[in-house]
Length: 130
Image 1 (cartoon, rainbow, N blue to C red):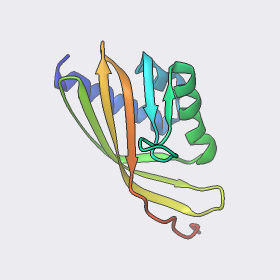
Image 2 (cartoon, rainbow, N blue to C red; image 1 turned 60 degrees about the vertical axis):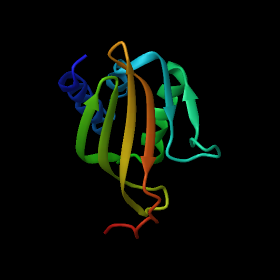
Image 3 (cartoon, rainbow, N blue to C red; image 1 turned 45 degrees about the horizontal axis):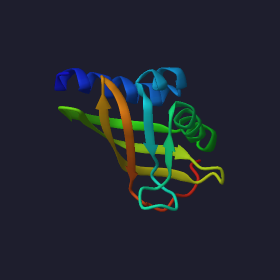
């Protein structure tokens, strides 16, 4: 698949995150997909394997931070790897504001994302807006 086509897929994937559209998100994921989170007890954060586990982990992002957005995305791809840089924003349960740059490293197989490996700056939350 061409780099241009992969970039289009990555951009559409990012748009689905911002719409909080779980069905659209999962349409981009490979049957054997894996999601490695920005935080967790392991060196890779936490790992979610398989469509059901990945779907549940994706949905948890919006349950934890209902106004979550990934802004100013910049995407690129080469062969079967892609990158999406963005600024993550949202309101935590305690009302504090999160704003931090992040990167998703994506690996593709058969035109679908088989691995989403997320990294986000460990920035302290900001005071509540308003």
